[in-house]
Image 1 (spheres, rainbow, N blue to C red):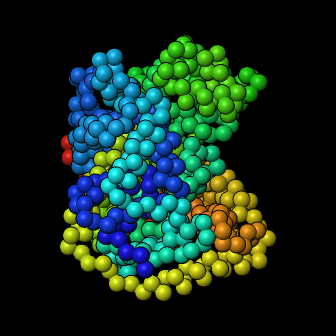
Image 2 (cartoon, protein in one colour):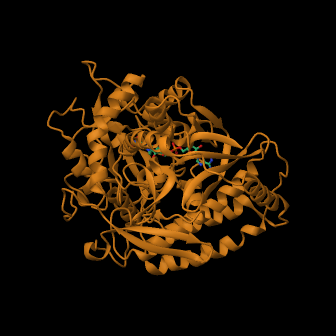
Length: 575
Ligand SMILES: Cc1cc2nc3c(=O)[nH]c(=O)nc-3n(C[C@H](O)[C@H](O)[C@H](O)COP(=O)(O)OP(=O)(O)OC[C@H]3O[C@@H](n4cnc5c(N)ncnc54)[C@H](O)[C@@H]3O)c2cc1C
């Protein structure tokens, strides 16, 4: 059996930052990072627009309190304010620390780190590396893993979290190269497995964002928090759904409907294109519904609106958002210097996740903790984003809470022994699970079932939701789940069998989707990204609380936890 003091699942920003912090705090600890991709291919590498921090390089009137208020207001008052305070107070320190590690941020003429405007932020506080910020940060962090001697298991797929008697003891993982299974036991297990965009049919997320960590925690009997809050990013490139960063609007681009109007004037007159994402996505969806969307031939009544950069000029476009120009040019043949880009909302981010406290320790219930289990990043819910995340706050969360969780783990493991567990039992169970997938004599291809499932989630749990729609959606996905034993695999070998991984991921997608729908059906109000046409108002007396959803094959049980409010009393949210 493999043994480490700490095993971290996930090589994105959150996992890598935690590993670096553990190694810095106690260099004698044996730390390992596992990732189903190479760490450098984690979705973090695709982050474009930037990371928020009140460095005050561009706007000296900014403050961490203003950043905290913007974040809480953006969250529609569902964020836990103690967690937001930590996030915004730590932000300048973690960005400077990244700078010292070697991250190449874009600069002001005087050499200080440049900062740009972003949706829902009242000051220009988003630090960036052109529109490739995730790339710049992740490469440095992965280099630092090597520097600190962190062991990397890349292209190993984790398929089981071992929890016994309320303690996390380890994981079971599968090597893609040759199908080898391994049990790892550790004094602390951390999940930093990222988001679940692939639950839906149009997403900005990479193919690996399948919610594996969430599903593994749920199957182990642990709750997931606030899963109904799914962020739709306003500007997914039509028809592919690939992201066109909010930085493009931060640098001055307009949203235009079929009548040629900057329609955001009717939805958020004070912030226009830089309103928070939930509001902007609903505005675009409403314009399209009202027949003011655009068709590919330019006529009205179509499925997208325009993002117009033309007035920004070639030089600004090519220096500030070159990657977005390139994406539109490469994928849909649009030269954004000369033509507007076709965009519509695309599934982007998971506000909910594995519930954790501000030390990153996972909650077993609204008031209990799991021994030996930690989580951070998009997979976790410390609830700094509440019902709607502000752009450039997610990279920040990964780095701040990656660091805080790493530090907490380094101290936690000092007083903990390696747990005992029955390696053979887990190897047998998991190899039987894989063998039964290989032996399934079904008639349905994995991609057919996955597509049907993603289409169902998109149709029944999208930007606009109602009880009737979601109840029907739940029935339909339960029918699709019953077809899972009907899938068959063409490849029955052990060498790079990616079909096995796709089959395991599909099961995870279905579990996560069922939890999202159940939590959404029960929240009879509209808050942030969760918009109910049958309950269009926010209902603080009834629903100013976090959802805790527990999965079992028989169904989903829900309970709730109060929101932590420290300094900002809930108000009506207007922009
Ligand atoms: C296109 C795009 C642009 C974005 N731009 C910005 C931005 O400008 N600013 C901002 O703040 N946020 C942005 N975001 C959001 C932000 O990038 C993510 O929320 C954040 O990077 C997530 O980091 P993470 O470390 O939590 O997970 P990820 O970077 O997603 O990493 C997850 C890791 O877990 C591993 N993993 C998952 N499941 C398993 C398994 N079963 N076994 C083994 N390993 C597993 C993966 O291999 C990977 O290494 C953007 C997101 C997207 C999709």
